[in-house]
Every structure is written in C-alpha cells, then in structure tokens.
Image 1 (cartoon, helix red, strand yellow):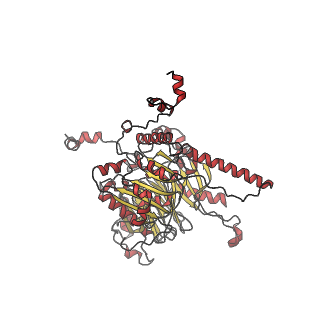
Image 2 (cartoon, rainbow over the protein chains, first blue to last red):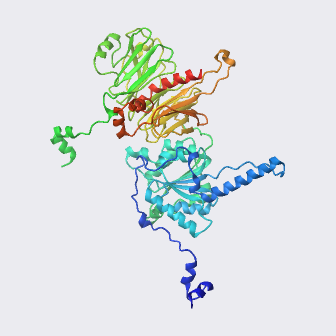
Image 3 (cartoon, helix red, strand yellow):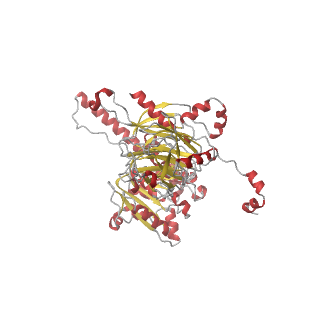
Amino acid sequence: MSPKRSREDGVKEGKPHQKQKTKEEVVHPRKRFFRARAHSNPLNVADFDVPARPEEFDWSEHFPEFLQEWHDQQQQQQQQQQQEEEGVTQSSGQSSSAAPAVRFVDIGCGFGGLLVKLATIYPDTLMLGMEIRDKVTAYVRERIASLRREHPGSYRNASVLRTNAMKYLPNYFKKGQLTKMFFLFPDPHFKTANHRRRIINTHLLTEYAHLLAPGGWLYTISDVPELGEWMAAKLDSHPLFERVSEEELAADPAAGLLVLSSEEGQKVARNGGETYRNVYRRLAAPRPLGAAV
Amino acid sequence: MGRRRWNKKHPDKARAQQQPRRPEDAADAPVRLLVLQPNSTVVGFAMGTRAVFVDYKTGGQIQLAGPNQPSAADVAAAVAAPGGPHTGTLRVLQFSPDGRFLLTGADDKVVKLWTCAPTAPGGAWHSVAAWRTPKKASAGGFTLNGSHALFADKFGDVLVGCVPAVGSGGAEEASISEPSPQVPSTLLGHFCTIVTGLASSPCGRFMATSDREYKVRISSLPEDPLQGSYEIQGYCLGHQDFVSCIAFAVQPDEHSGEGAAGKVRPSVLLSGSGDGTVRVWDFETCTQLSSYVASAPAAEPEAVARAAAEEEGDAAGAAGGGAGEGSSAPEELGGGEEASGG
C-alpha cells in the first residue's frame, strides 16, 4: 500500500498504529520525575510571588476558558444595555453577574488526586489546589494540562498554585468567597512546641471562617488518631463552626472522596490504617460556646 | 565529641566563637518609645531597659516602683541602681485611654500594668498586675474603655489581661507587694509572624493589628475580650513590605464651631510600612483611601549597614525602621492628621 492511500483510508484492519497516530498522543507526567521531600517548612520566607491583594491576581492564566466566556457575556450585556439606552430593544435589565471565582480549595493538594476527581463531579465550579512544594506543583500542573488535552472540555475548572496557604490565603481570596475547603492528611507536627504550626488551630480557623461563605464546609481527614482528636477539639471550640451530621455526609459526594481519592489516602488504605474524618460547617453567626469549653 | 561537651572543655574558645548577638537582642538596642499620658501632662520616654516619666509642666519626675518598694524614698535609692522595673529592653509603653494605667512590656517576657494615680513630684507608680508572655512582647494597647490590656508577642498571638478595678484611695495599700505574673488569655493570632502594632478603633467594636507579613487585620473586638475574638472584619492589604506601626485617627469636624450639628467625617486607620508609604484606610470596608510616600523603602538587611553610613539611612529609619519604633510614630501621625484635617 502506498503511504498516501493508507492515510486517506483512515481505519485499517491490521494497522492499528495508523489510527492512533491521527489522534494526538497524550503523555501523562510520571511521578518519579517530580519526587520531592514530604516536608517543607511553612515558616520560611517565600521565594515565590504573592499578590498584594485578591483583586490584583490574574486568574485568567489558570482558568482561561471560564474567564473568556464571562468576558464575552459582559460585552454582550453591555451591548444590550447600549441598545436599551437607544430605545431599540426592550429586554429586561440584566444585572451583570459576578466574575467566576474559585469556590473550592484543596490546601496541601499533594499530587492532585482529590482535585482531578472533584473536577469531574463539579464541572461548573472553579477549584484550586495549593501546594508549597515546587516540584509537586509542577507535577499537578502537567497532570491537569494533560488531562485537559485528553478530555477536551473537561478539567477546565481545576488548577494548581504554588503558595504557602498558612500565611497567604487572604492575599488570594476575598471574604466569604470559598464554599469548600479541604485539608487531607495534614502534617501532624507531633512535638508540642510545633503544635502551633498545625494547619487546624484556633487562629487559623478564624481566618478560614473569614474566607468561607456562611454554610460552607470544611473537610479534614487524618490517619493519625491524636491529630484527628486535636482537629475535632479545635473545631468544636470555635464558635463559627458546627459539626456536620453523618446523614448529610453520606449524601455529599465530596465527603465520600476524602478517604481514597488522594495519593496519601491510597497509601493509608494500602497499609491498612484507620482514618479520622471531621467535616464542619461554617455558621452565619457565632454559636454560644458551652461553659466547659 | 559533641558540641556541648567541647564547649564545656574549652569555655574560652566557645565564648570567642559565639555568634554575635542580633542588634535587636542587644541590651542597649536603640529602641525608643514615646508616649503622652491622656488627661495629664506627663510624657513617658523609654530607652533600652529604662523608662523615664516627666511632668512637662512642673519638671518633676515620676518613677516606676520596683519590687517591694512602697515608699518614694526607697524608690529613689533603687533608681540609682542600673536595674529598672524590667530587666529586658522595653518594647511596649502605652497609656490607657483615660490615662489611669500604664502598660509596659519588655524582653524579659513580662508585661506589667502600673496604676498612675496622680502623685506628687518624686512619687512612684506601682505595678498592679503582671503577665508572663511565652515570647517577647512586641506591641500593646488597651480596649477603648480601659477594661482590658491587650498585648502581642513575637509568636503573633494577641493576649488579653484584665485590668483590675483599683479605687483611687486604696491604691497605695493594695499594691505594696509585687503582683506575680499570671498567664493571660489569648484573643487572636497572626500565624507565626511578629505583631508590630495594635490599636482599638474609636467606635470600640474593632481592633487593628499589623504584622511583618505586610498585612493589617481588622478583627471584631467582643464585649468580653477574655473569650477570644473569632470574627475578622477584613484585611487592609496593599503594603509591599512589613507594616511597622498603625494608629486610628478620628477626623475632626470640618466646621468645629457648629458643635453637635456639624458633620463628622468617619475615622480612618493609618499604617506605616517598610515600603516607605503611609496609607490611609477605611477600616469598616478595608479599602485604601490614599497613600503617601513618606520615605525611601527600607533596604535589605545587608544594605542597611551600608545605607546607615550615608545620609539616606536617617530618612529610611523614620517610617520603616525597626519594630521598636512603633509607638513613636502614632503620636506623630495622630498629630499630623488632626493638624491637616482641622
């Protein structure tokens, strides 16, 4: 067969390689080239850029399609309003919708397991993973990019950012912007002197409550029993958080993902460990704390 | 051989090899604090471990009584000794809004509260309460009604202590003995960053705290601060470098002659930073109203030594400077704002 005819024929029995070459080969990143130490000191001075304010951060490099659609919508509405002013059309006045904003945040997203599962379950919600390690962030970025190529139209709502979430969350998000926050298998910091560096402590919970919209959920899971109790105790003693009941957890798709979606969770399951899940809701008004607290 | 064992065997060599102390740890670090007592004519000045209070009308000095010194005569003798009421460099020097109490905090990790009963010249103020902070104190203030003392340490925690109700008559006998330091409650915290400034808003509902991570945070101040503050009003973000000092300014009426009928402009928050700017904020909405370039940005630590030798070092030190200059700036800013707004 001459090479030209085989290409025109397309599907050819006995020549499966020809068919695959017409589709772009999607290579997913291999973790072995992105290995990094498990720990990175969160108290270090940042060597990455942090925006001074949430308004100054350009989200279009993370979610280009969503922001492009929104811009087109805004322009359309502006044109409609101009026509209204001229008295041509009489469409009902549409208030401009808010720009699409990140709603879900995975703090310490690691290799991105939870993020890619959430992206297909909530395709219209923008979600962001935050990771402090440089190489791991690069891996997640390549993974999302290759998934976007492999499934055109999907995974446009997920992205990753390299930053120190304990220090710089208010620089990226406005008050009440987030609706879900995920803390999967955080660093336990066993020594008592380092307990203040745990990612769930009273002071940081106040910050998370500021960024979560009322009714937003905060998901945590850990395989260390002492850390699970600590997180439950800190959340119980904070007046702006209330525990979510088991029935609501069973009905929530994201809660079911906590145990097995991330790479760390799969490792825990392989080793046959137990996990301790704490999911709390952000209240609109502080609840009175019991006298014992 | 481990380092500790080697140090024991060669104490002289170990001393020679010891790392030089940081400038802020030095005993006579140039920390200058200046406060004015409200409703009175006393000026307080702190330098290093010593604090001096002078009544600028009469010229008389008021001392801070050391431990177990109820009478003024003993105090005068003790003043000659080098040790002051604090053994570390003073970092916090604040009067309560009504001028009845003084808060001092130092590098000896103790924060003390002194009652400022009006005394004859040569008299002494006595300590009525003391708190032990886990790290050195870096900023302090009072709630608007003076019921609680707030102070922040280098961990980033803002701690609160109750100001004891002290009657004007019984002050002398009640505070004969030095109160033992207690553990304060925690109000709020910035995560692992030094809190450089602390101020209560004029309406009494909010508290502003600034830190070295370029942030100014407005938190709601509850009625009972001992319960803790859990709601953040917002962040005033915009500074490009550490925030060194903050102060609230109540803007005077435009036409002060009209009295109650005159319009009052809302209060604003001012913040000075190492990036050389002073910014004015509307603290309820956390928006920046304006920004003034006060000086050149504070340089990198290596360049500071070079710049200090040149003239620019003085200008940079005025607005940016070190964390210890926090208390002096608000007085100037408050005075300047009223002068420009009035």
